[in-house]
Structure formats: C-alpha cells, structure tokens
Amino acid sequence: MLDIKIDRLKGLMVERHVTHESLSMALGINRSTLSRKLKDGGNKFTIDEIKKMQNFIPLTNEEVVDIFLTEKVALTRPKQSV
Image 1 (cartoon, rainbow, N blue to C red):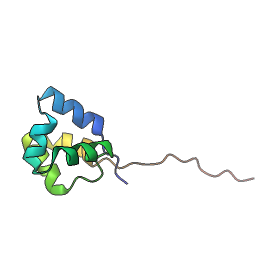
Image 2: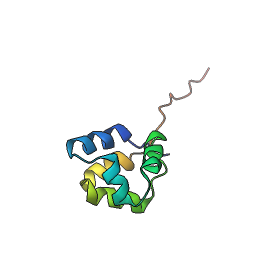
Image 3: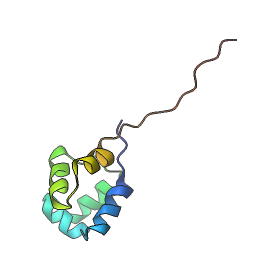
Image 4: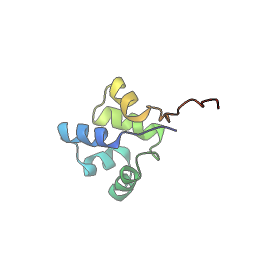
C-alpha cells in the first residue's frame, strides 16, 4: 500500500501559489473532485493526473517519488520463542 503525503503536496502548492481551482482546471476535473481526492488521502489520483500535477505545480521527480510512491511499511517485532 502506498502512503500518499497529501500534506507535503498541499504545502508545495501553497509555496508555488497553486490554487485548488487552477490545479483542478489543469487536471481537467471539477474542483469538488479534486477536494474529495485530497480529503480521501490522494489514493485515487491516476498516473495521468500525477503527471499533470508534476508539470503544473511543478514537482521534481524526487518530490513525486516522495509524495506519491512511498511505500507504507508496518513495523513488526520478531516473534520470541518461549
């Protein structure tokens, strides 16, 4: 499962003066659809939408990997023998 870093994406949008309205237009989706995808944790963004965000915001390759392609890993303790 991927762990989308929505707060990081929103922070970069603010830094780069990208509004929800302008991003939704660049993605070709309704503003309400964008808001819902962000609220739901970003797991519903398509590859095409991520590529469009990368060009529009703009995001570096490293930022895209950091935001969208970080794998969520559960920490587990090894079983102890009795």
